Length: 120
Image 1 (tube, rainbow, N blue to C red):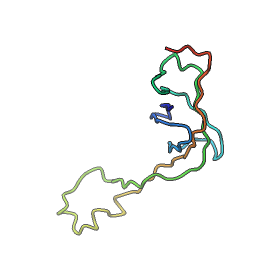
Image 2: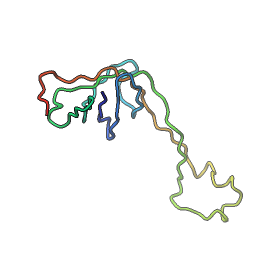
Image 3: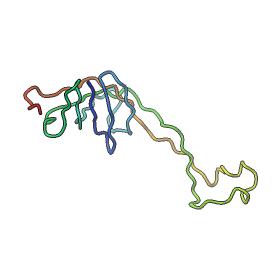
Image 4: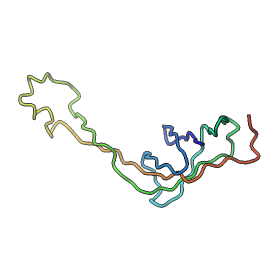
């Protein structure tokens, strides 16, 4: 059984016991979080849309971390390599900035669907 949940502006496919890295959330480490599934798949049965009313996916925030480092140019224009001099000038600290996305790791604990929800 797996679920597709909405996390911020993206969607993640999760199963019970899986650890998922999502964008930074305001909750502290150790807090329980709840997500609304967009899709639930259990074997051959697929549940989506209004039939998911009352369904939840819960998890626990187990830590925070930084994502991969990205080098961003602050100049806004591209120069031919020949005009920049030696290759070390391509990554001059004055013209570039490093960025690492702050992430939270969430351990998915439970996927529940209300028992009296109508099945398609």
